[in-house]
Every structure is written in structure tokens, then in C-alpha cells.
Length: 584
Ligand code: ATP
Ligand code: MG
Image 1 (cartoon, protein in one colour):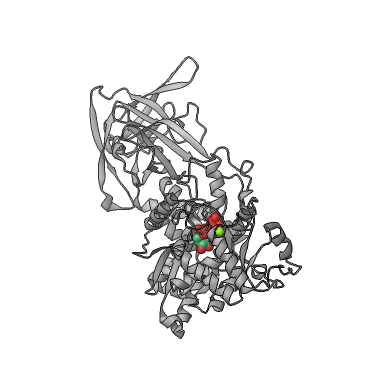
Image 2 (cartoon, rainbow, N blue to C red; image 1 turned 90 degrees about the horizontal axis):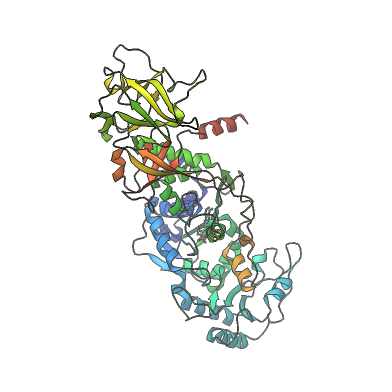
């Protein structure tokens, strides 16, 4: 998309930003932030969020901060903090020196809480979690006021100080905002601001035994950083009233929260907590398993930042939730790799072919085009000798009519090399084909027939004397069904509330076993690849002719033990889906 095209179809977030710039709100300043919780690796849904925030800052001459929302000491880890930064950088974004942590604001947040108590807008409540739930009411019934709601300001101040001092066990008291127990918006029914949690925090250690809730922390962190547009996903829409309430009651800088639809993709789970279940359950090799929709997994699989940004651009930003076909994501990757991948020879299921009229001790080299889509990629020399490997599936002893590849008496082209004709089939005692015998036409060097005769089949091959063995990993979807994740999305405070109650948070009950595709990983050993691939570098994409796009595995591949991941196959199914959608 060009700039002017983008302007025409401005999404609602950018439209709001432009409106605010035009009206002089925030003095025309644009400040965004991306606020991940360091409790897992980022997935492509997060990429939608940070792509939006960083891009808006870029487009409107503003800044975007990276802020770790680290208010839940129980689930957060430093390792995730590092990985998240690496993933954002990989996609091409930078926050310069504006790396912040909500935990850096703990003291300030505590002071804001004290201020709200003094204003009569917050109180210490002694209800247990279960009682609190009872008092909260339901969507159709109003809540009831806590018996502690009207306790004296002095008493709440004293109790809050003693909560902080560690006098009370976990879960025995909370600090709550005094708003409205009859509000139709349950988030406004005296929400918890602080909970007691004797847990070590990844940054503040044991300094605190009370921790602020997400809703209280988030709006004030935005305010402290003077964020103008606080863009978040739609599950926070009902929390905006509370976001605004805290800022209004405290009379501090007021950021604007805007909610956009989450990214959903077919056959894909986009929830850190659920992905963690996959990791913990050993269903994948880790957060960076190439089948995972995490940025670390996608990178390892061979996704490029360009393909992901192209995809996110096509998906766009809107308020209405939609589910995007995973085939569109694959299409974007395929288009990008088609432009940049060098075409190479790799035989995944080798069948030996001996060319009987080719001299035994001879080798020669044929020139091969690196990328027909990109002339500047140049050419390379491919070694050839008397014995080559072809794909087992490229030979049939008794071929059906439409089979144009190799068969007894048939002539085919070995790409870039020469024409060969099958003269014999060698089998073992079990009747399996172990080897083919062929002759070649010495006049057909480079693969052109000297007399212009038609040869339909063109096969990829490698020279047996020069080929390098490799392991190849093929991937299918992790989930069998199109739709895997239609449960309501929870917010950090839903989960924190459940944590306090020592219950299982709603998002942690996901039952994977029945949904998983048992054939999502296929490992092929004994593959043979052209010798140049011995030096294949991590992150460099290749097209294995006729087999798809591949890249060396960043963890397991070594020069003396090559391992390639298939990033995506060659066949594009997105066009077909689009056509069907237009018809339907
Ligand atoms: P999850 O729900 O996947 O466990 P989260 O929402 O708890 O993730 P955070 O680290 O809190 O993860 O999210 C950081 C930001 O990314 C938030 O602003 C959130 O709205 C946004 N985000 C998370 N998932 C998606 C998604 N699928 N699509 C768009 N934005 C998302
Ligand atoms: Mg969430």
C-alpha cells in the first residue's frame, strides 16, 4: 500500500489520532506505547498491537514506548523480558531509550492509592474473595455494598499501611475503589486496586507484598508517561470507564484509550496463557517451536519480518472482530519468499540413478539460475556425476496416462543438466526399487534437446558424489479444526482475580489434547541437498525446487548435521479461498 492509498482508507485509530492533532488536543503530540506482560513470548496478535502503536508514532512524528506491565509477580520472568525485546526489534521497531516497567511506578502508584483513600474514593475491604464475588452481583442483578465500604478514611489508611508492611496473609484484605455497586458495568462495582501477595517480583524482589491490579496500574502508567493514545484490544472496552475514572478522580494527565479488534486466525490459538499450556504440556518443543504462532516460532520456521508486516497491513485495524484465514498469512510469506529465495536442488526421498554411458571418473558443472524472479541473484555451478539422486515419487514403473515424469523407456530432463532415458530398474529381494539405470544424451548439455524434440518432465536432482545429507522437518497445523479458540478472552485482572482466589483462571482450562493434530510434525531423514547448502545460514530462505520454501533450523542445524524447516509449501490456496468467498 502506498501512503496515499493508506490515507484514503484511514482506520478508526488513525482517524482519531488525526482528529486530535487537528483539534490541538495534547498540543498535537502523539505518544503511544506497547504494554506487554512478560509472562510468555509474543505472538502474531501482539505484533498487530505493536505494529499499530509503533507505526502510528512513526507516521505522525510521535514516539512509542515499550512498557512491561509487570504487576503479577507470580507469572512473570526476566527471560520473557529479553525475548519480547528481541521479537519487537526483529520486526523492525525501536523504542530508543524509552524502555519502562510498570514496576518502576510502584511507589508512585502507591501514593496515588493513598490519595484516593484520602479523597474518600478508596477503602480497605476485609471480604474474602468468595464473599466479594457474592457481593458483586451479576450482569442482571446489582451488587451489594461491602460492610467495610464506609470505614473511616483514617482506618483505611492505617490498614493499607499495614498491608504494605506485611502484617496480613495473602488474600485477607484488598484495597478497593469506591465507585458504584449498582453500576450496570461490573468493572465499576468497587474494583480491587491492590491485593496482598507475598511473592518475589522479577524486578522489585521482596520490596512489596501488595501488588496493584492491572486496571489501576495501566491507566496511571499511561498517564505518567503522558501517553496520548492508549491503543488496546477490544476486551478492555468495558474497562475504559474505570480507566477514565481513576484518571479523573486523581486529576492527572488523561490518555485516550481506544480499542481495536483482536487478531484471530483460523487453526491458531492467540493467547499467551493457552500457548503456555502447549509449552508446559510438552505438546511443542518450546515457545519457539516452528509450529507456534509466536514471533520466535515463526522466525525459526522461516517467516520474514516483511511477510508479517505485509500480512498485518492487509488485515488492517477495525473494531469488529473477524477471523482471518491462516492461508492469507501463508500467502504473504510465499509472496515474499518467492522474491528473495534462491532456488536449490534438494531431494527429500532419494532414489539412486546410475547413468551408464557417463564416464565413471568424470564430473562436470552446470550453471544454474539462482532466482528467476531476481536477475541480480546471479547463477551458481552445480556439480554433476555418473550417479545422481532423484525424488522417489518422480519415477513410476507403470505410470498412468497423465504422469510425465520418469518411467521405463521414458526421457526426462534433469534441470540445468541433461536429458536422461530410463533403461532399467533394479530391485531388492523384497521387490522394492533400489536403483534406476539410465542413459543420457551427451548432446543435451544444460538440458536442451539438440534436435528440439519435446521432453515434458523436468526433475530436480543432486549428484550422489557431491550431495550433503540433511534432515528435513515438514509442518502441518497444530490443530485439526478450523476454529479452535472461541472462548471469551480474559483480561489480566480476570486472571489475577482468579489467582487471588486460588482458583483456575478461565483461560487455563483449555483442553488441548482433543484438538491437536497428531500429524503436525513430520521428520524426514536421509534427504540429499546440493553441496552449496552446507554453508546455508540461519534466517536465509531457500526454495527447494518443487518442494517448497525452507530455511535452516536456527537451533538444531550445523554444517555437519543440516536440519531444514519447511516454512511453507509452494501451492497457494489463498486465491481459491478468496474466489469461494466472493461467490458465497
Ligand atoms: P494473551 O491474551 O494472548 O495472553 P495478553 O493480552 O495478556 O495476551 P499482553 O502482554 O497483556 O498479553 O498484551 C499486550 C498487548 O497486546 C495488549 O495491548 C493486548 O491488547 C495486545 N494483544 C494481545 N493479543 C492480541 C491479539 N490477538 N490481537 C491484537 N492485540 C493483542
Ligand atoms: Mg489478554
